Length: 481
Image (tube, rainbow, N blue to C red; front, side, top):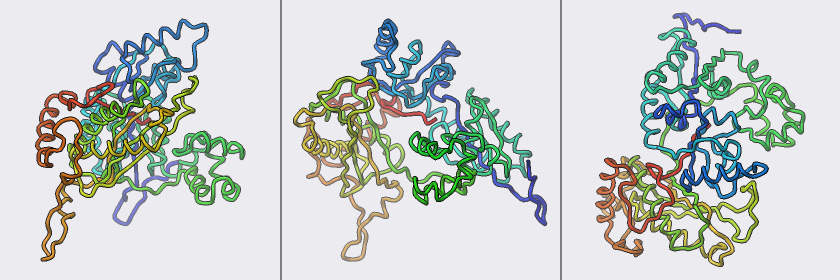
């Protein structure tokens, strides 16, 4: 039951409200919006190194088998987004394409157009800012909005939620599911309850009533293993979890985690809606068409990945102090298994730079050095292991506006700004004039950025780079759902 608005000596005071806005099947919905012939059809936006025509061929071949396999052999890649028509077959975001097409072989598979999705996301941010200046984006299509006090100016919270959804549809042509509650946790769960195009308002004091019948997996952060452990204790619903014995849970999860589970299962959450600060990292990765061991080919792939990371870094106004690579290694000798997920290992290698940089050449050279080290220290050199996935990333980001703070004092007490690129001796020779001075790298990056801003990232690249697929901006992104 509603507790009504608190009353102060000076009249009604502001109640805390948080909205969680989650766009419905965002990438797939944008594709259906732009191509109405896709409406009503199962649609997958997929991140795959294979051409879409080849994916359809493999799916058609699998359909001829006496029994449809759980995974379709030969298909690699990941589902970035699935329309609700595809979800009816069990297809979900982040699912391997090999499984998705086995579940729904008739699905239309499209490569992602991430520049287009970002354009729509910018429009969404503008709409959200009409309702609150305090916005915490969680992804391109998902955000928390602090609506505290909005009832005092815009009327009942139910009307505010309806207006928010209407503005989103009016400006983008898309639908959103919105949960509004006294805190972020409850708003997040509420937005999932009536997808797609839902609006759920949870009044103050009603969270425990809403949570009680929900399965424990509905609680963010509770994965399959935690749910299995809870069920072993006879706990299947959030209502049971909220009233569970703290000590009984502590035996399985530890005291701190046990307390957190019980508190959150009761709908308690005091975390604020936070305007984002400096991102933790920027990365790009590629799933290879064929497993690879050749160091030269891997370096060629690194060229394009590092260039894309540096382009994003410059576009976002940052320099970096740390470069890392990510490799998924699989045994060279192995039997193909339908699940396709139970072998191999993921490794990372990182290096801290002596000076901040936003130069693609420096990031590439550092990544190559890390790759060489990994090549020697793993089974790649002997041929015992092969690379399935290759990624490059940067962390320890420094805003360009803060670079002057990194100046170093001289013996006279003055400050000299440190160079923004690595010293010349750190730049390795690889192919062409890569031993050019840092100023050359800055000029070259600026020239390439100018071209890409007009024609897209794929309009120009280094001659030594090798890519498996170019999806507008060239790379992979996963829609959070």
